[in-house]
Length: 144
Image (cartoon, helix red, strand yellow):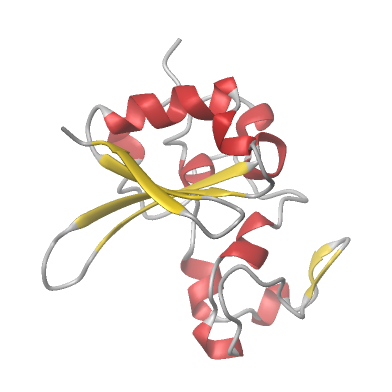
């Protein structure tokens, strides 16, 4: 079974009809400069119902789409970040054109689960995948 659609990595937005739903993984993992929110800290505006400032959220929040939302991670909501325990991201550094594939662990051990390992292995055939563990460690796989 194919878990990754490489052609969707650079997609600028969500694959219809995918929506975040009640997933708020990026609200904790990503830094938000406009709100002075550091990475790996829950946003002050996120609650049980999601983002309390959603209509007025900063541009960096509006423009961010994880790989599940973009459709690059195939499958149903079982592979959505809040269910999988891993949020995948892909971006290109302006100026250098360097590509980056990141896998952020939401809870300890999630990167080692079979579904996450399958996605990492598929992504790793085409790109180096940097793994960000919940305890602060980093490692890299693939990209040979």
